[in-house]
Amino acid sequence: MTFSITTWNINSVRLRMPIVEQLLKERQPDVLCLQETKCPNELFPFEPFRALGYEHIEIHGQKGYHGVAVISKLPLSEGHRRDYCSVGDARHISVFLSPGGKRIRLHNFYVPAGGDEPDRSVNPKFGHKLDFVEEMRALRADSEDGVSSILVGDLNIAPLEHDVWSHKQMLKIVSHTPVETEGLLAVMREGNWLDLMRAHVPHHEKLYTWWSYRAKDWAAADRGRRLDHIWSSPDLGPHLKAIEVLKEARGWERPSDHVPVTAVFDF
Image 1 (cartoon, helix red, strand yellow):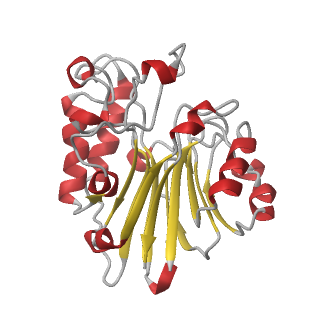
Image 2 (cartoon, rainbow, N blue to C red):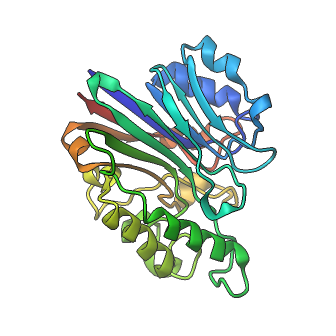
Image 3 (cartoon, rainbow, N blue to C red):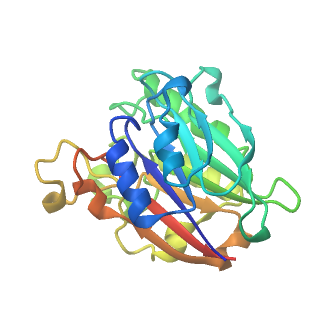
């Protein structure tokens, strides 16, 4: 069977429900993982998803900030929400699903952005981000016998040289500073995670998923960053069929500054 999973920082699910519905109608992924839903659980828009055939929904939200959701055509079970850094933020959810007979633990993350100043002594938001990433180092892709793993989300770090428009100019900009990139690569290395996007797109090619709202013409400037990620346990690597970054979604009506990223597997 073919199995597809899409991750998207939607920057308010209720505000951008029209383009979420557009994505689901046009692309029909089996699973959609959203970040920055900015929606308390009691106000989450379940019905539009169910009307499109997405009956299985796990959410972890809060009013006005953060929030993650897993919306699926396939049954979900054992939803778990971890409070990283013990500050009460809705930034993580994990579920089990079984596409093609494979048992998979799916993690959906929204890592803190970290503010503007890359110095934790003057910017607590940056310190929070580094602490969050440090806590993620304990998360292993192969921690459960007989279970594969997928990790998706807005990790708010572009770890590689060609994940940003200018490696040299971005080295002192939050999201691409050495302490952040080294931290995220340590999470990947120590947890035995496979970077599926870079398994599909060579490291020397530019690859972006985010373009700032501040740019007058984001497409012409093309000063992007790869902040959104799809990782897996190594056993799923051979099953990866395609990766799609839907850049055109950045130009949709009232867009998020992130675009959907989809991984397609053949089980």
